[in-house]
Image (tube, rainbow over the protein chains, first blue to last red):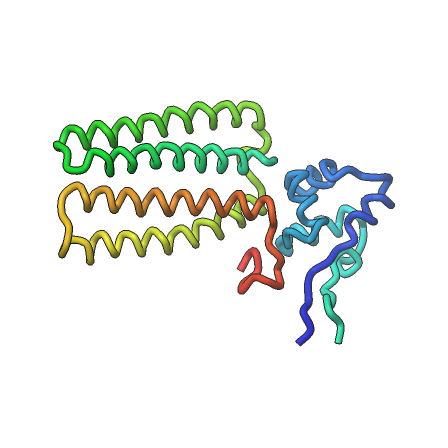
Length: 74
Length: 146
C-alpha cells in the first residue's frame, strides 16, 4: 500500500492573501505562530476544527487547503 | 521556541542535574541514618521547587499569551504523558510487588523516587523532541489526536 500523508497549501494561500503572516493566521484561528509553522512544515496535523478554521480564513473549501496524497505513488 | 517548550527544558535540566547529584550522593554514602536520607531528599526537592518555580514564573511573565497553550501543546503533552505513564507504572509495580521480597527501607524508597524521576525526565524529554522534530502522521500508530 502506498504511503500517504497530509500536505497543505497554507504557505501559498497566505501569499495570495496579501502575504499574511503566520502570527496573524495563528491569531485568527486561536493557535500560536509556531503551531502554524509546524502545520505548514508537515510536522503537525491540526484537529479537524482547526483545519476548517484555516480554510474559513482563506475562504476556501477544506480540500483546497489540505490534501491527503501519496508520498510514493505506485 | 514556545513557552511550553521552555518549561519542558527547565524541568528536564533541573530534574537531570538534581537527581544526578541525589543518586550519586545516595550511592557514595551507602548505608546512612534516617535523618541523613531525609535531609538529602528534602534538599533535592527544595532545590527543584525553587529553580522550577522561579524560572517558570519568569517565562510566564514574559510569554503571558502562550502559557495556556494551544491544541498542539495539548497533543504533545498527552503523547509524552502516555509514554511516561507506562514507565511510571512499570517502576511502581517493580517497587511495590517485586523489590519488597529482596530489598527494604530506603532502597525501596529510592527505587520509587528513581521510577518517578525517570518517568518525569522521559516525559519532558519527549515533549522537547516532539516540539523539535514534530511527528509525521503516517509514522504514528495513531494520529496526533487519536
